[in-house]
Picture (cartoon, rainbow, N blue to C red):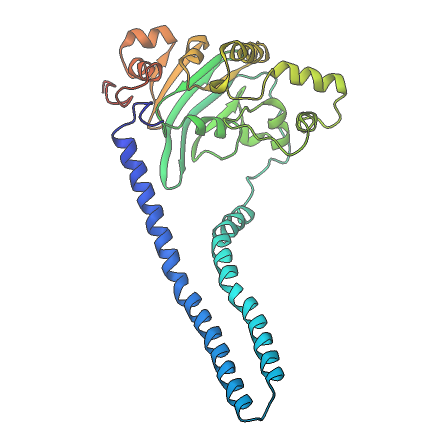
Length: 329
């Protein structure tokens, strides 16, 4: 897949480095577990050997009978099994430690502050005003300003790690900005309660999550009190739940038709991976390193000869250079 996408140099190096780090971490984990496993196994076997030797000695001396010796050995063997299973349990506990640490970090995370009274934007124009955002020790977005009138469709494109998804996360207030502001009709999202904000935006994630149960039950998660007709209408509106890359052309066109109908008249921000999205957008923003490298319509950016054109050519071909290698400046 990396080769088909033209990522045959630096991307393979990053993958190789990651795999080597996984190998080193696995080796460290295994080596740290060996002393305890060996120690427990040797202790159990040593105790069993001592009991066997002592039982044989007493039986030969006539102090106890053969039946008593066999009984002791059987009980010792049955007692050894749960002790030896402690090694396996210890390995599972070590494996679960990282998961428990992640859950603990989530539970200890302080919730974002909520306003006492929520502002109610009347319309849905958007604005990113001098936004700066750091995450994981690096600057994801630095000093980005982007106004967006109501009803406009914006496509955000750029290489991996450019900050595309971070824009949507800041808009939905999954995180707060470190500087600047994200506004809906001039109102800072930090002045809107989570409930009120979620009532005004709809998020379509890159990955689809379905819970065990029927399609109807999954659809009802959005509105548990919806009637049967409303559930059927919602399912019909989205057509299919598969990613479009796995669909045949007819069904892919049906999915796009359903999406187009749902987006009509709404303010839409799309993280675009296919150039078809850029062609249908009112405006395209090309991000590079958390900053706007280019901005304009699809045709304007193609004519400008900047970053967008080589990136588009790469996505339309099965192989090619890294998108930023041919980007001027």
